[in-house]
Each structure stands twice: as C-alpha cells, then as structure tokens.
Amino acid sequence: MKRFLGILLSAMMLLSLMAGCAAPAPVAAAEPAPAAEPAAAAEPAPAAEPAASTERVVIKFAAQGDSTPATQAVVDAYNASQEAYTVEWVDMTNDSGAMREQILTSMQSGSSDYDVLSMDVVWAGEFAAAGYIEPIDQLMKADGLKVSQFNAGSMTAGNYNAKQYTLPFFPDLGLLYFRKDVVSAEDAAKLVSGDYTYADLTAMAETYKGQGDTTDGIVFQGKLGECLVCNLTEYTNGWTDVEGGLTAMKAMVDSGAAPADILNYAEGETANSFVKGASVFARNWPYQWGVIASEGTIKQDQVDVAPLPGGSTVGGWLLGINKNSVNKEGAWDFMKFVATAEGQKIMSVQGGYLPGFNETLKDADVIASNAMLSMPGFQNALATTISRPVSAQYSKAADAIMNAGHAYLSGGSELAAAVSEIEAALQN
Ligand code: GLC
Image (cartoon, rainbow, N blue to C red; front, top):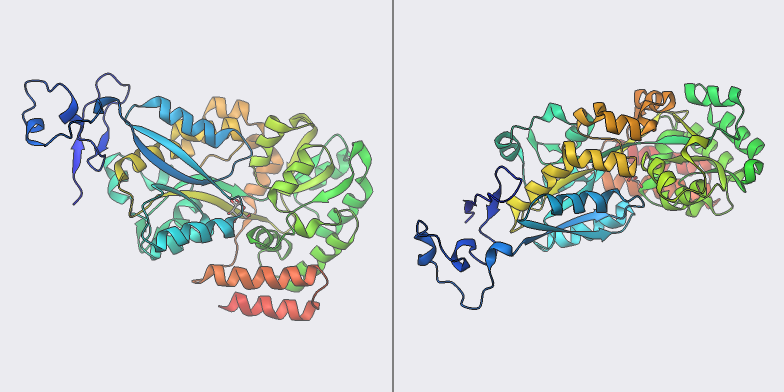
C-alpha cells in the first residue's frame, strides 16, 4: 500500500526528501512534463488540478500549549526550510491527563487527523504497546541517526519491545526557582546545594513572603492531575516515604506561605505568579526560565534555580508518528527536524527547554542564550533525578495516587487512608 516516491527538489536547500504518494495530486502529472518523464502521462490527471509543484502537503502536529514562543518558532522554521510540507500545530490542552484522553479517543477510532504526536513520557509507552504509533528504527537508520545521540531517559521512555517509537521533543526535570534578589546569600547557597528539607523550605517561604513586592512565599502544583503526581514524587523522595511526603506537603499547603487556592494550581498558574514577581519560590519545569524572558515582569538575573529536597522528578515530551497517518514521510521529516540540531536549538534558545539532542547541549549559542543550563543548581538537579512510579498500568495508578493525595491535602480524608490508598496503587 505504501508507495514512496523520491523527488528531487533542486531549487531547495534540502539535499533529499522523501515525498508521500498519499498526497492528493500526483506531482508530475499536472506539471508541464519534461520529455524524460513518460510515467506522468500514464496517470489520469484530474483536469482541474492546479500546479502541483506549488502545493504543500499539510502535516498536523498535535502538541500541548506552549507559553514560550518556541513551539511556534520551530514550526515556522521547518515550514521555511523546505517546500514540500506545511506543518500546522494543533494546539492542545496543557493538562497531560486531558491531552492523553483527547489523543486516545482519536487513536481508538483509527483517525488519521494527527500526523505527528507530542506525548508525555508517562504515556508514550502505552501508545506504542497499543500499536497507535509507528516504530522509527528503520527511519533512524536510513537517516544515520543513533539512539545514543539523544537524551537517554527520553529514548528509554519511547522504547517498547526493543523497538524505538519516539524521539525527544524535550526532556523535563522539576526545579525550585527562587528570587536571588530576595533570599539571603546563605539561604541561596543552601538551596543550590540541595542540602535542605521541605520543612526548611516551608520556613523560608514563610520568612520571605511579602518581601521584594511579593504576595506569596511559594507556588507549586497542588491541582488534581498529573502535575500533582510529579510534586508528590518529589515530596515523597521518589515514593520512598509516602507518609512523610504527604505530611510535609500538607504542612506547606496549610502554612499560609502558599496561596489559599494552591490546590488549584497547575504549571500555568505557577509560572504566571512567579514571572509576574508575585512569589519568592516556585516549583516548575525548565520552560519557566523561557517564560521569564518572554513574559516576565521580573528578569532572569533576579532568579536562581535549585534541586528539590527529595530529588527532581523526570518528565518530558516525546514525538511520534500516528500509525494511521497518510503522510508518514512528511511526519518523519518534521519530527526529525524538531528533535535534532536545528529544532532543539530553537526550543532551547527561544523557550528555555532542555535539549534532548546531546550535541545541542554543547552548542555555543545555546550555552550563551540559556544561562540556566550552566547554573550549579540546575546541574545539581540533573544529578538528583527521581521517577514517577513505574507501572504497566501507569494511568490507573496515577489516578489513584492523585485522588488520594488531593483528598488528603484538601482536608477531605485522613493521612492513614491516603497512605494506604497510595501504597496500594504503588503495588500494582
Ligand atoms: C510536564 C512534564 C510531564 C508531566 C507534566 C505534568 O509537562 O514534562 O512529564 O507529566 O508536566 O503536568
């Protein structure tokens, strides 16, 4: 069924490009055919077809909302780099769980609506196992790409049954952002080293709240959703101390250092508070560094980052090709662009994202424009990463964990009940 037609687009900067026959109009047919192209005549050309050489195949890219300019910039750069495809970004929700449901519904119906998918590291494996995405080993091989060129953890997350299904869009890790123009040098050094506890952090958030024109001490993700699972992973020290972690997080929620509605805060509310200068501390992902640059009332030189006391949760997003896409060659071409040198540089320089293509970490422009990558607190966070629970039925376990955690944090259940529900979910 799959036919691949190589067309040489000599006027363009691309050296070679795999173009899809699934495109509606046969490229050669509508063109004034050069004498040496007899094959074109054999195809019954639809009479009213416009000049096909100028027609681009549309590639739909389903990706989460981005509060930095990076995703749009990488799409624009790809569209400007070649003439065969136009990528359209289908801007999805920012909530990982809700996005999973949305894409899952589309996949289960066998839809070809999306060509390239952005997937959270915690559900990409499930998509691969269900056969919703295309293995990419052969495509990588044909283009000389090796697994070792990419972020190792991200590649593992998209590997199922010894087959690779994804390339990294961007790896993530939890960070504590803090206002270095507010916090004392002594406290700053303690935070950057990672040698502090959640009790220390709660005390600092209470002390500094209100200073430097802030209204809140600390913001983080207490909202019912995947973001809460990430925060609980950190408070429980990678699920090694569920009771201690829940107790520490409840103390933080009740301290008065966090906003009263912190249990409704996801990443967006967190970033909004911190970049507007309303809070002294914020737990968020690397992209918040980019949001300070693009939307901040405060400036990057007022900010430092530190590891979280119990370790920094690993997250991130991966790119894969919808098994039912009718534009797989274009999907791969775009995905490869985003995940390798050019695309990853745009993501890091314009969005503050951590590059998933190892070579990009050494790029002089990336190092110069993304100061966070060289900060000691960032390096210490990278050295102390922890994972969410590993489970064959991850989303079921995550649902149970977030529900039990949120009920306890909001005063709707007792500690012992929350601990036993979470422990049970971790066993599955
Ligand atoms: C970030 C992480 C992702 C995580 C999500 C939770 O997007 O990259 O892995 O699941 O936050 O909100």
